[in-house]
Amino acid sequence: MPPPTLPLLRRPTAKDLRQQLHQLSDTAQALQAERIGLEYQLRSVHERTTFNDNQIRRIMNELDQRLFKEHRSQSQPDFQRGVIANDLVIDGICTQMQLNSHLKGAVEAISKNQGTISENNLLLMAVLNELSGDPYHFAHHVAVRLVEYSQVKDQERQNPPVHPSLTSALPGPIDPYLAPLGPAGAEKASTRAIRDSTVISLRSQSPSIKSEDGSSEQDEHAALPTRSASALNDLPGPIPMSAAVTVVPLADQGNIVAHGMSALQKNFPGLLESLSKAPVARIKPAPAAGAMASLGVKRGRESTDNNDSPPGPVKAGKKARIGKEPAIAHTFVLFMKRLEQLHQSGQDIGAILKCSRCQAIKRDVRVLNCLHLYCHRCILWLRHEAQKGDAVRGFQSFCVQPECKQVVSGKTTVIDSEIMEFLQWYDKQSPAVTSLPAQLNVLSSAVAKYPEDDEIKHKLEQMQLRYKTLQANAVMDVPCDLMQIAKLARKPY
Image 1 (cartoon, rainbow, N blue to C red):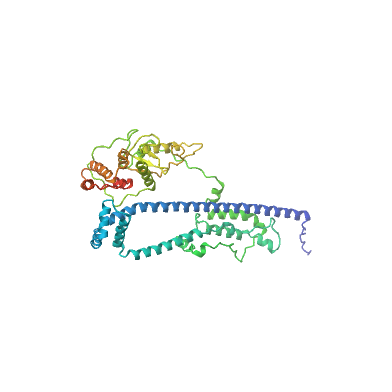
Image 2: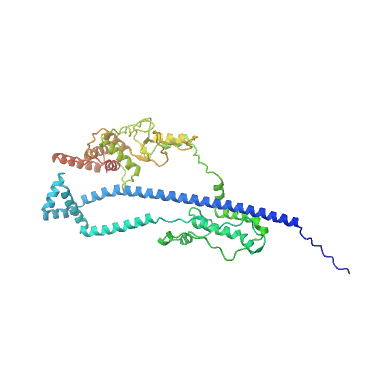
């Protein structure tokens, strides 16, 4: 039996080895280019996330400032009215007046608007003594709290929170060519570990991206790091790789990029599409005729022609009671303060009360952040025209006043018809108009609208009696505060 014949083994020639070397070099260059592209995309995501975080912080700071101003504009008058209406406080001050003749004389002088600075300080100290018990002990605690609060604010300004950079977690640059042999080449070819560490760093640093794994919300909140004083000052270093690095064969290197792209698409749906496509502006569909007609009605008030119809006949029902004070927008406060300053300086405010587009005084108006007034119908017209689009402005509507670039968005401040009626009366008065005549005008209009409301009638009678008493005693009334009158007009009961 003849021995079996063995197949002949062909040795690779130098040409074949050279071709394989060129193929491996091309593969290495392609992988390097893909890696650079992915790193650029990740940096773009991080920059966009950082920009969004800064925008959110800026908006939150503005909201905090607005909330503080609105709270102060409402809490201070409430505190003053509460002190004046508290019989216990007034009785305690009267007891102090009996024991202190200087305090009694100061009260009599201040009631006639003839008090000096020392007399006012004496009365205010008596009020503070009645409210706090020991004003000097109370002042000590307030001073300690002020010092602590100032120190905390100074530390926050000197040491702002440091946000980690994405480049600290990315791997360092590698050689342009991958070595085909040896352990060093195997370690450089393990881009799977690099991809995993990059994805982990992106998850830990980007709060705007949500993963779709099955972890519960409670576990995610438990895994979030807490911001301590030391953590805010520490910069994160490079994320260490695992000791057990998976060695990827050379034959599988062509699939690494595709595998990494699919993993990114799975962990972050829509990420790659958002990076490659430009943002598209949303085009709102034009509302139908029925929808446009329904938008013209709000809070039971409706316009029938270019000028709003005058107030209708006397209403028989009472105004609905509201448990708390209506919310006051920051723009509304600025608008009323501007009208008050212009009127007290002797300037005409009639032009400001007109709609910026149709130049008519309406009962149902809105105020933009630029403090320009618009009627409801013109606001709808501007939004409808913006839906047609413009080569320069796009699909946004802007204020029609010259050199005003305020966008007419859905967030406008409504001025009630009762306040507009009062502002028209206020425009015709002298700059020295005081508070009581303005309150009498508002209450008289409320009684005419709600004749069956005994509470408004009783308040009007008290206000008339108070005004007659001031005139009889030749006591000066306080200047007219438009914010106080606006609150009374919105809630006269």
